Image 1 (cartoon, helix red, strand yellow):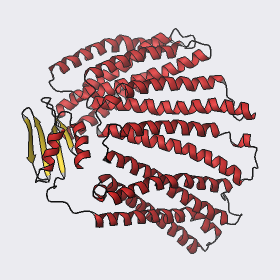
Image 2 (cartoon, one colour):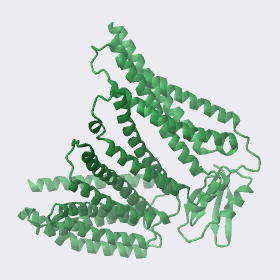
Image 3 (tube, helix red, strand yellow):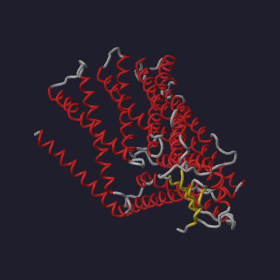
Length: 563
């Protein structure tokens, strides 16, 4: 039986490798990609990663045998010994093979960088989880050997790969690993931070009002604090000591904007909505429930607002730090993104108000009729989203009036309007289709009545609200096109490709000064830095639409081209 299972797994692995090799060969024939090198990297670093995981698992499993809670039979011990005895020497041999190959290579190896990122993040997650479970046991008064072994072994693995990645300068794909570590620390740390505030404030709330809905104790508060400390340290290491020192590439800005600014804002708004909903529901309900029991979710709402607000405020400050005094494209991205969040909440809340109101008008014999709380929740979403959308949308409209040329030419504004109009139009059409289908079905079945009204409440609400929003933004887009200033003859550059070192930082500065967003290609043969002033001068004096600017030791070469 075991031999059949092993044979099945081996055949599946072989089929997978054959499929991957076939895909790489196909891509190699259709492009200039070196298929042989890609296959060598796949097998080399895939084997290295598998052997690393086997050795780490084996060492951890053998150390766990000292744990009285672990019942390790002969099969368990044999498997762990096999991982160490067989995979250990294999890991050493493959690692030496990899190091020799890297020593012969004059260029950076993409496979090696991907391996470092994957191994570093996997070991980081394992070490953090082991540390959390081990510390949790200490609070309960027991020393758990198994999670301690997991923590120590994978912390050593993480440190080794973290150091190897640091020696290569954390550039290119290694920079992706930094941002992924930042994201893991930020998201998980924020979750534990919310949980910590909820547990701590929940205990104070129960003591103040004498209400116990969920049994809370000191251990739950300490467990959340442990998670916050562990993942907070991860975030500090990857962000404060590494991420903050990286160049502000598009991916770096996407992390700060989407995960930090938008993620923090949405988290805080959920807390605001929850608090407002509980207050409004209590007021509308005529104080029918004791306040102490009704507001038991306030600690969670406060935790969401505190953590979300802190994350949003900090990353918004980072995004705007060291920026120019005038309005930049980063400012536009922030404002239009937040306006989009507010618009989605406004449209969704208004649609919910309409749908719930229609449902309340249906006679009581219809099942699942919405109640007061549903209407209060919908109104609360509308009250939270509408001011947010109005605040940021009117700000963008003021910029349109004061600086029409820059605002109307902004790709961020153009993408925002097209996305809202396009996605809204599609959703409105789908809602109209469902609405017509429900009505026609009821007419043909001779069952047109309250049940039909109840069935069409959501398609009707979405068709009205989303349709109006899409039409409004379509009008705005049409007015933008009509008011768009004509391009001056001296500013004809539409696209720029930069070839050199440090291109992303130069590209950001060039975009802020000229409005042209360059594409960056890093030179792999030598380190030749680009000059921001020289690139800006070349763009402003160019008479061609498309430019290729190559950094050279004696200056830079500007090559016009056509697409």
